[in-house]
Structure formats: structure tokens, C-alpha cells
Amino acid sequence: MNERVLVVDDNDVNRRMMVDVLEQWGYRVDEADNGKVVMRMVEELLPDLVLLDVMLPGMNGYEICHWLKQNPKTDHIPVIMLTVLSDSESRARGIGVGADLFVSRPPNYQEMHRNIESLLRNKRKYRCMESAEALCGFLEGLVRRLSAVEYERYQGAFGYALRTAKILGIDDDGCHRMMMGALCCALERSLERVGVEGDSVDDLVGPLNAAPWMRRFLAYQRHPGSLGDEGPSAAIYFACERYWDLRARGSSDEAALEEVRRRLSGVPARLSVVDALKQAVSDEAFLRRFGTAEGDAGT
Image (cartoon, rainbow, N blue to C red; front, side):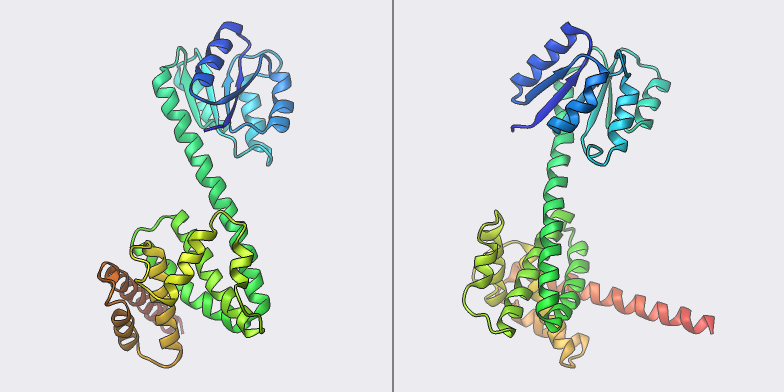
């Protein structure tokens, strides 16, 4: 934990007490005693969270919070508003300007710590997802430019993989990780198509924190089950890519699913993936029939 918290309060005693408590919890803390300096400090420091008193000289807390949430540079920063006011109208106004939490004074510090950690945990997850989205966008563009064939294959297989993952309850973070792994597979084959050999994908992803996981994901696609319990996303993509390839070669849904089940027979814990894929295929077929029926009814 090394997150930065900005405490804004014109009452010296309250502000110092809050700063001391936050520092004991392990946060880096900056402080301001009036509304006029807050916007400049936030843009310069980019704190991870703002603890904001409502009654301030210069600009009040409502005005500051509104500005923070309207500014694209700062709208992602959680804001906790602190006040002696406890009526519902004041709280509604705080929520209306975008406050993430509205806390009455004197605060329950144990509860406040839990709330701060919850807001920061969500922010950390958002930051990770944002980075994953940027990396996926880069990899996707690279595959698309290198090989239209592999890009089409990736799109088809990942479409089934995403639906299968949702059926199995995989969260957004897990789906982004699976997308990175799938794009690495597509990139590896795309490089082979243009005559690049060796460990080119390893070289590309080597500096990334996710590189060890990506390498295991690639290894699983070559030999499922050889790595033990690698997590469901690698098995999901293996099943869906094999299903896509078999369907592209003319196999029926039933034959393709049975072949995938056979390929995963040595990994019993992953047979639930095939059942989820079967459900995803069934759902798609239903929606396709439903769309056709609606089209016929409209003619």
C-alpha cells in the first residue's frame, strides 16, 4: 500500500487528526486548508483519493467535488465528503455532484478505513483493466496487420470463449487476461505466417508483468493439461479455438463439441468448460433462429 490521499479541511485540529490516522494506516498524505488550492494540488499530485470537507473557505466541498468529477483528468479519483451535516438533503446534494461516499462527523475510523480500502481496491482494479485494454488494443492491431486469416480466426474463437467465460462466471478482469492470451496465440501464428521464427512473442511480452502468465497460456494451448491447474481461461480458449477450427473445416456442432471433449478428456476438472461451450453454442443457435423468425415475420 502506497496510495496518496489528499485531505482538505480548514479546521487545523480535524485535519491534523485525519492526517495522523491515515499515515498510521500506511497512506501518503497531502493536506489543504481551503478550496482555492485544491484544484491545482489535485492536478499536480493526482492523489488516489480525496477526503473533502463540505464547509470550506473559497470554494465549498460541493463545488470542488463537482469540478473534480467534470474534469476528465480527475473524474476517476474517488471523493469522500466529510461534514457535520447529516440531513438527507445535504447527502443527496453530495451524491448529486459525484461524491463516492458521504460521511458524517465524527467519523467511525474503523468503518472509514474499510470504505477507503474498498474505494481504492476498485480503483486499482480499474487501473489494471485500463492497462489490459490498452495492451489488448495494441496486440489486436498488430495481429490484424500481420494476418487477416489469423485475425478472423481469433475473432471467431474468442467470441465463443467470451460467451463461455460468462456462463462460467469469469469476471471482467479474467476475460481481459484471456483476451491477452488469445491474442498472443494469434500473434505467434501470424509471425510464423510472415516467416518470423524463434521466440518472437516471448521477446515482445518479456518486459511485461504478465509475461510469465502469457507464456503458460501459450504452453497450455500446445499441450492442455501439461501444466496442471492453470486456471479456467486457458482451457476455455483451447476448447473454443478447437471448436472454431473444426466448424470451419465443416464439422457439425455435435461432432466438433465431441472432439473437443475428447481432447480435454485427460483434464477432468475442465470438462465443465465443454459443457459451458455447448451452452454458448446452443444459445447462439437459438438467437440465430429467433432472428430469422423475426425477419420472416416482418416480410
